[in-house]
Image (cartoon, rainbow, N blue to C red):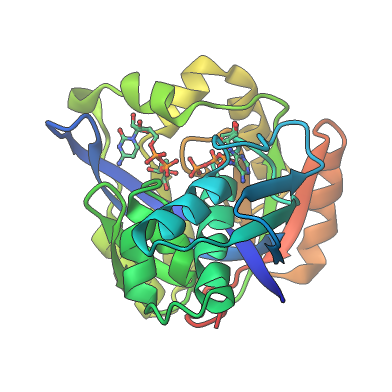
Length: 289
Ligand SMILES: C[C@](O)(CO)[C@H](O)COP(=O)(O)OP(=O)(O)OC[C@H]1O[C@@H](n2ccc(N)nc2=O)[C@H](O)[C@@H]1O
Ligand SMILES: Nc1ncnc2c1ncn2[C@@H]1O[C@H](COP(=O)(O)OP(=O)(O)OP(=O)(O)O)[C@@H](O)[C@H]1O
């Protein structure tokens, strides 16, 4: 039997860090939403008891370091599954980009194996398991739009943002999330208004959403990699309505309300950045059901 799952990327419309916790993680308060840029995860039963990763992307590990492998191993161990599976990952989401590509592949693997192995787990149970793999995995199990707190695993679903385009530009560098959190100066943070953003989304107020976009990790990554600041500037110059770095970066995204404005932003960025995408938001819940 064969199961296919879509694994979409996320962006953070707002990302605040409240404090460093005793377990080394940071307490966050952020708004995540799914976008229409997705990997494809294909799961196939194997006639022997092994987890096999197939990926033709040289930046993606094909062993136990792969988050999709870890998802399969977790389910096998927890539910004593003695079956093998081949996990084929077709990457579209850029790697180490701040778009939760690996987390979404892991979440897709959890959803897909739940079907393949007929485990009967709920989305909430899958999200709880996903938290053992990484902080972004719980959100990726559901997709949609959410306010995420704790270390990112406490998910409160909220209404989708109004329809608009998202232009993404990924500089050639890859960023380590752990490095970015480590270099964050907690005491000099300029906190974004995350609750205001929840209200703006609820009210479908596009202008206010643009106005309130903020990410406290930006200061760290922009300091480490000045080219990210340059891409932000260019995206603004080419006419995006609002521009922000996603997650720990280095991908920069810009919101564009009117399709007529899209070519100027997209083509402008293509001039000096290899990986540029123009996609829609997929903020509704149950897009992955
Ligand atoms: C930046 C974001 O992508 C925003 O959505 C997430 O906060 C990061 O989520 P992630 O990549 O799934 O992160 P994890 O794999 O859980 O953690 C990677 C590393 O980032 C740091 N980390 C992560 C999440 C968090 N709330 N506090 C942290 O300090 C920790 O050093 C951790 O070792
Ligand atoms: N399925 C996977 N796809 C991509 N990278 C993976 C995968 N599994 C493990 N990795 C490893 O994880 C690292 C981070 O990749 P990923 O694309 O998940 O980062 P990210 O988008 O910054 O994640 P996040 O936004 O959750 O912090 C990569 O350098 C890679 O070695």
